Image 1: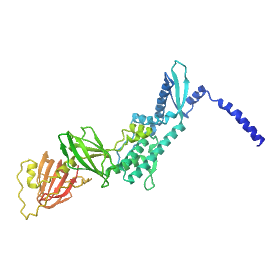
Image 2: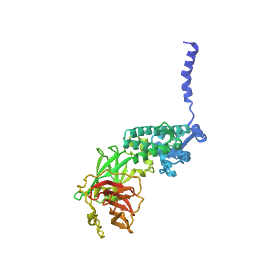
Image 3: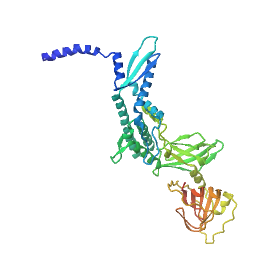
Image 4: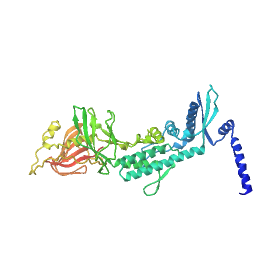
Length: 446
């Protein structure tokens, strides 16, 4: 071996321990932390070092919150608007605190005083470079959850797709530079995550359909029983979880369908006309596998999607009445409003077929009812419940002539039975003059 190399090895072997021992003193290090802008720190006091360290950590979190608060001024929203990110210092502080449980617990610690029987003073500190690395890792996590969600959506795994999109969105809100984070879409175009992710979730909600069957009651058990057909993009699915409430009863569920079917057992006092299904998407229980993520989900309570709420009430009423279509001449018995009977139609009767016993699939229509129902018309007569002289509630429209009403082609003797609202069709079934179902559950809405 080269003599010079041997001497160098001997020097390092003897000198390095000496150099290592010459560490910066606690006093000098504390002075540097206070004076340098490269550090963020918190100071805590307690009867024990552990207590003092925890207080110092809380101070550090507050200091980080002050440093990054201005970067949170952006909106989490889809292209059609709607969902806001943190809007107050309380929201921001709660999101910043999600870093404390795992990441900040590994920050450096400096004990300033540790004398027995005296208050202990501890400093928890980190560099700004450490903080930026911490944020960067959370941004990478956002991208990873988006990848999982996209893959799940392509495979029709609705629950998993919604859950991972939501996790990505919640993490994004906790990321100070979230408004600048970009991800690749399915066409390999860069999109801003804070608008793209909510849009993907809303598209999924639009493709979900819950079709109620006939509601029955079990008075002995004190329950109302409601079968539901669950579809995604028109096909039955088991990949959706939901719960239900009418606004008064506690939320019932969660329900997960089997072979696209689910049976809801509701309290007897449930007001079915007000029943709403809430599609699950937060994945709070599943997030427990990642403590950091679980903290974020707890803090992101302000992130909510109205599109996840599907009203079932009017559809339940229509689905129930569709089982036993009522012929025009018996309507007066069902709707006990005294009006003169309509003149019988003078033409050859066609053979009357047995009414269909199948409830057709619920047609979810985005189209709004635009044609009001007048008190007097040459095309139809209306019998049923009214409010301020307008059809409102259960009723029947019987058509006196062939024509088109609100986009629906009708023949003389046809009738529409179901629910009306403020002088418009809300949700009805269309029958021919013999009581045969022609079109089920025509939903117009308002």
